[in-house]
Length: 439
Image (cartoon, rainbow, N blue to C red; front, side, top):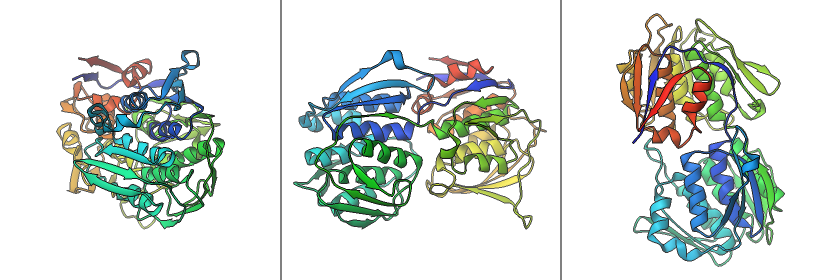
């Protein structure tokens, strides 16, 4: 177990480059299983979840080579070749243990089923933020002709030959859409997916698959049409900047009264993120492809036109991503005004607010999905306390609170933060934060 010790009150200042997108990486790395040819992927972040998935690919027999000469601030470059995949590994205890500890392992199913006609994956792990059902994934695969069986804690999926069809997804699941797309690219005939997720992660996956020879139209929309092809070939792919990191850095700058430039944020792929932080009163300026957050002594939450209290809620793309709800909540604690935070998707994601209350924040947890934040307008600073990170995003929200608090804070269980943020302590120290890692 490791911890962060943070002395708060230091203003962050300088430039920072976002890492490659974690959620995109977990999809496109699985897609290398769709071809026996080499696939080169750059800006791969050095984080626990991605590294675990790379280890899983190695266990399956995928050749993995890192090009150390191509490492950048955004991440690393790897070459993958899945020409000697060993399906017997799927039945091994080692595979089940490693796959069961990683939420992203579920996206191995689509490409394995598509290319080899079978896949096995245990009930995957990940954040403890409430129910995260997988029905959308497997109902889509069944529509394509697969047989799905759940027994002894694992999903077993088989198909002699997948066949295209029309399907209307019961929810616009990002990972569900990705898995079904990867299942359909080598299927016979045409697959039409209605109510597909259209997040940048899915856009990037479809873009990569098309560069490999797939025939996917409607990319970027909620209606995807996939004409099956016989085989896919190798390609080169570059990950987008991680929009969750971009939002986290906006929050860090605001809470610490920092002066921060977020380089190469690729603003066109951020959706509502800058706009939502502006509603919280934070100045976010666009300079080319960079975002600039200037130092602000105070920031004031907007109200709706009729004068009613502002509500910040998550929504499917291009709405505000649920992964930043925790960040928006903690940023609101030092704003002027009040806001209702509504987390619609996960019923356990707001339970970390008790730790913010211990730090002096004024928050009313209405129910598992809603919290009202009464901003302190910096008149009463948060105070340093000892706490533990319950999941990736709540962990970073607590880290942001600690950076702005008076005194010393300690955050335990930072392995959760390491799952999604690359060398975050080192990068924050370069911006002026006082943070150390304690084993």
